[in-house]
Length: 112
Length: 114
Image (cartoon, rainbow over all chains, first blue to last red; front, side, top):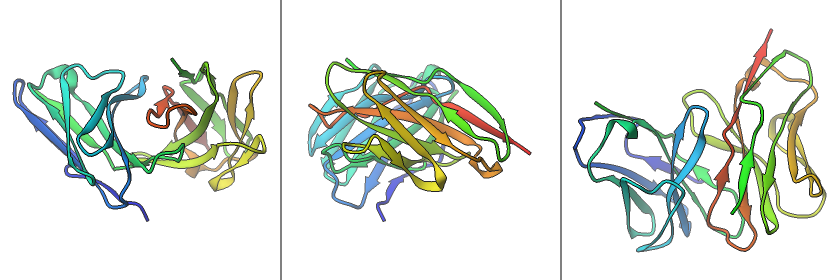
């Protein structure tokens, strides 16, 4: 089975901190995604990566950056966390070509 | 640009009753279509997908969906729901000219009551 692992289930950070959310997949997938999930808004795409060191902005990239130095790992970075970034963050991967994405369990981030 | 609309934010239904969760999309090109389910405190898992072929697609847990190109819809149905179907359901699309972006609707919370 495909496994997508997010490093933390829960995180509490202070305003202004630099925050790293890590995601690892074990199926050699080309594509990896970061979404944030908020009630009533569904999943909104922050960034996605279609290859090592390649990335594209999603619908809400402001305040975020990403890093993909190795194929299996995709990191989401909050350069200076703010309270409006309190949310559930979901990582996903897929091999491309219209196939379904596989999701991690999510990281619930609270910025205080 | 593409968008996905799930008109119902919450659908309450009694156990063993049928249910339909609605999904409409807009896109200038053909799309692949997906339904995902999220149980409480869990990640998303795939229920079913439409890539091509028969417009009636069957998925896990007795769910099915029908692709209607003229109405740009992909509604999810189950003839008889169980308490365990209580979850949030998300419709999603991927454009056929770019397999990168997977765009989701806002979700529908299905509440099954005894």
